[in-house]
Length: 102
Image 1 (cartoon, rainbow, N blue to C red):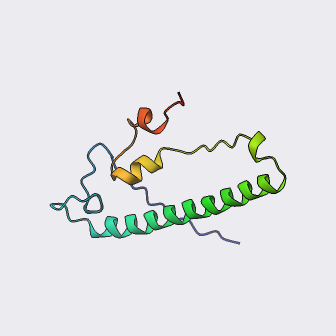
Image 2 (cartoon, one colour):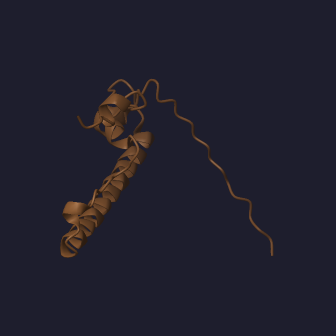
Image 3 (cartoon, rainbow, N blue to C red):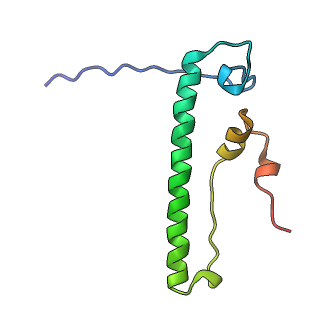
């Protein structure tokens, strides 16, 4: 049985200067990247909605078992929220996205 070789497309984008139409830069025309960005952002939002629903189910189960007041629920994620909300890289936003309770 012969195996077809897989095509590989490797796209590298440097986020130090996010000058793309999908980031609101009007002087750059990037319709293909913009269309891909819309699809990826949609997928990200669907994922967040799914996780939110699962968290609701978890909290309801803790309520049913009378464990909510004695259970600490910790959520861990990457810095994507900061990135999506500012439309720019979030690699330097650690102090804003990970504050410690006082």
